[in-house]
Amino acid sequence: MVAPIRYAKSGTLNLAYQVVGEGPVDLVFVPGFVSHLDAAWEDPRLARFLRRLASFSRLILFDKRGIGMSDGGPGPPSAQDRVDDLLAVLDAADCNQPTLFGSSEGGAACICFAAAHPHRVRSLATFGAFAKGTRSDDYPRGWSRDELERTVAEVQSTWLDGAEMRNPTLRGDDVYRRWFTRYLRLSASPGRVREMMQLNAGVDIRPLLSGLRLPVLILHRKADPWVNVDHSRYLASQIPGAQLVELEGTDHWPWIGEADSLLDEVERFVTGRLPNREHRFAGGVEALTPRELDVVRLSAEGYTAAQIGRLLFIGERTVETHLARAYAKLGVESKLDLVRRARYLGV
Image 1 (spheres, rainbow, N blue to C red):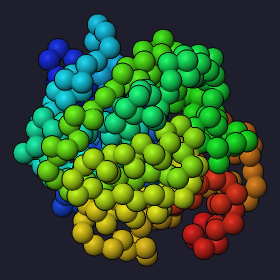
Image 2: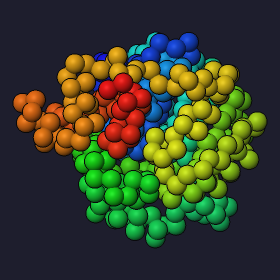
Image 3: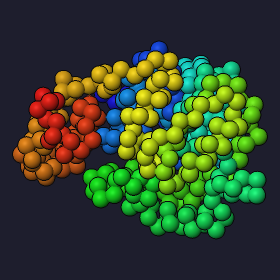
Image 4: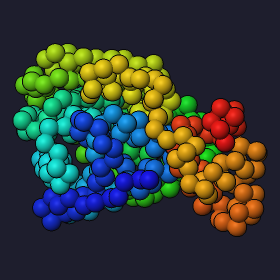
């Protein structure tokens, strides 16, 4: 079952958070510029990713202010707002010294927090992160101002159907696109997206890097189309003792594409031991509810969601929700994957 959603208080704002898993180490996942705690569990890839993190940690998830299920303030959040919000979530979750794991812009937020509250952080991992959003004479990376404006306009115009822009391996996946469209709509409005992208473009945490004194793991896919790997190479060169791992792949979101190699690195970093590949995913057919098992068996036999809905007297959307949850429990990513592995999975 998905963990309940609770709220932390940051000033007058309510920030939605979840605690998943019961591992010995606290791990806080700080997402990129959009998220939605409820809708995240509907996608089998993302749910699988989060369950894997929770399999070796006490995983803390949250929606940043103005995003997803959290309150928004009167204007764009400042860097100090981000630090204060993360501190509020840690306090509400009774989390003292976690490992912070930040994806994309979440990486910069983690670095800001570690610099401001070093006694509250055990270690730090980033994925697809950057130190500065826009290009300058002393930082020949990131967007130029013209590129930023074109990119913002493109993202706004394709906000409800632009899933492939950051995740090329999903090209043509209509099931993912339907979920992604809903996820984006629930996470933020087009206007909020413009606001957040412009805010990210103004990020410059370079002065903080040399002062970090904690274990740091920097992960980046070599062919990330959204944030070039050179950003992470710069981070590694400036943070004392940082470990850089360049991964194969072309997707910007960490749960898309070859996620296992990334998760192996995070698990090794957090726990100090090699991942047990035989026990990567908690769940299995025993974890399915009776209704989920009915839906999965019919799907494995080739029935469509509409046909399953008619047979079981439930809506097509309900069928897809059952399938998403079942995929996460079974560790499969698609109907084709389910059909191929049905006998092995025992369904």
